[in-house]
Image (cartoon, rainbow, N blue to C red; front, top):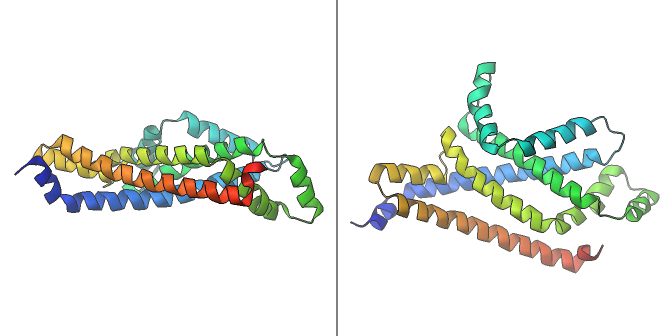
Length: 221
């Protein structure tokens, strides 16, 4: 039996890790993007009392290594009487960490938008929330799509750290196969294939978003 035969016989373990990674990544990214949008929306108001706390949150998340954040959530919180399951610790860590990065990406694109269209929207009776959802956010998403695509890849790679807190993801599956059958190369090459597959799907989604934005004229505003 070859090493690849061993990996094939362990395909159920790899498939379990793939599904866990995909589900955790999908939920965390959706929540992180919503968090980033909410932060940018709150920062729209120059008089908001949330400006300093939100900017501090973004700066702390950008300064803090992701692995340290996960360790604090999973191993540090129990000392304060708060115990999280590994999956929830990973989800919260990914959401907060990449939510801050999404907020900074969108905020950077926001300063490039013309204030004229904002004034026109107010003149037509748009409320701040409606204006942000209907006018500002679509432009930010289209203009920031390359940076958003890069951030998605970074978030996907960060899921690989979660096996350290016992999350049964792809890296955990490869590590289990390697430790049991001593086939590290083949096991991790198979895992790379799964990560590559997810990255290809995200790349196609970003390209579709670009074509959609071009048709709607968002690339020229």
